[in-house]
Each structure stands twice: as structure tokens, then as C-alpha cells.
Length: 150
Image 1 (cartoon, rainbow, N blue to C red):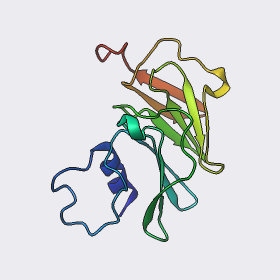
Image 2: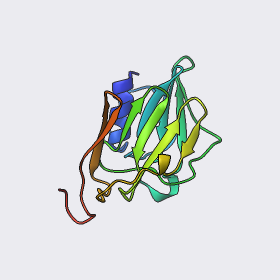
Image 3: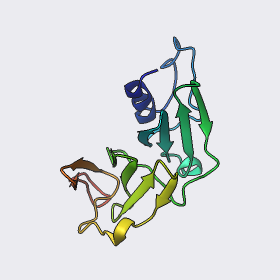
């Protein structure tokens, strides 16, 4: 397993013969639209598209080659159809599902902060925006009002 392979699993729901020739390990749930981060030899998968699992935290321990659900679930839903998250250091910056605010998941403490620094996205970007980080600046691009991509 490589990090890019896990990301591709997360971004396309497991179905059919996608993993026919793979001996595992397998994700403990079939889902898509998760945020992904790496810290301390653990890959963490946050949220998902399906409402019953959009606050799940799954950890993949690289040394042990094992997926497991974290006992700490998220305080809110996380998931979108875009690149709605970006990692910098131990922090994953996430556009909330409504596209109005930023969440931060700290991989070292395994805690989610809602409405990070009370930052408000000036124009609603819904679940279609992308976020990037460069030179100590978060960039939010694209998005929509929930009816059509902009």
C-alpha cells in the first residue's frame, strides 16, 4: 500500500472488482469523500459521504499494516466532492460541509476544532471548493451555492 493508493481508495467508493487482486488490508467501511492526513507513521481518514459515517475517524498504522476505527469520532460531519482539505504539519484544514467556515483536525492530539479562529469564508462555497496551503496562507478556490459549480 502506498499513500497515493489509499487516497485513490478514499476518493472512489469501494465497489465491484476495484480491489479484486488486492490481499488487503481493506478499509473497514465502504465510503468516499474523506479527508486524509499523515502523521507519526499513521494515515488518518476523516469523515465520509455517507451520513451514518460522516463523523468517523479511521487510522491506518503503516508499521502494523492495519486499519482501525479511532475511539474518538468527529464532533461534526466532514466530507465533500472536492479537494476540501489540506494538511500542513500536524494540522488538516477542512472546509466545512456548508462551505462557510474552516475546521482544523490536529493529528497529534486527534481533536477537531469547529469554526477555527472564527474564520468565515466570505462567500459560501458549499461542498465544491478546493483548498490549498502555501507560504503560510490558505487559499480557497472554486465552489458554488449548492446548486451548480462556479
